[in-house]
Length: 332
Image (cartoon, rainbow, N blue to C red; front, side, top):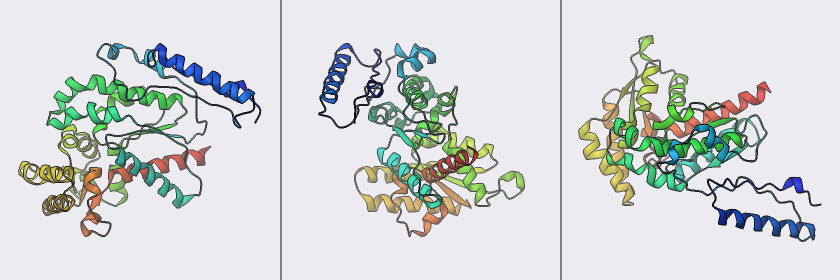
């Protein structure tokens, strides 16, 4: 393929890549161009948005305006399709991978075409920034102590996806939705909320909210961090559903030990405790249980009868993503 200088793009923001890293990038480009001109390489080179991964802004960096942040991460537009999906990776890499798998599966149900997907996943954000929430902090404490740095990091990912051509943003992570309101503010494209997707799925299942007179109760089971964040309760309550949480004794003696067993790789012990927690909620006359934890969901076998009484939020988000994409394609 003939060399085309227009096909070569290098974007390495000074605030993200230091002088040494930028010099290395320029050296790579020069060598690659030489190979292209000499006919050694068979294809053109494309280097887009060379951004150092796992960036968590320092306290002083959090003071930057959103406009400055947008300039910092503005890069080459990768996608031009009207149905391109931008994915902000979650605290669990497996949950993110499960979401992508489900998107592909639900897409193949209606069409053979694949959706354009752009995934931005930061292991540092997953492992350290969200760790403080797991210490049993209240929602107010999380907001005051962690919101600044985590929000800045998440917003950076969101704006990078927007500038790269994503026309819809999704976040297959339960805990990260604690920052959804601030994160979605100013977003130029639709930003799906996992709680709204769950509420929509419940209504599709003919589970009528309270205002219609059916008084449907929906159970919610997840980690302490997710339950304390409160966004599922808010979104479902706003849609008229009555949300039932595990009582304190169930959390302390069943749910928390189940998570501990899972971390120790005691899969069978974790599965037994999870099934007990689900049965306790069902005894309290809930119609369905929102299983807001990928790790917990993975414990149940596909043929487990209890699974029929559970809703997988990651699956509902994947379905809503595919539905949005198809609706956009039909319009255009």
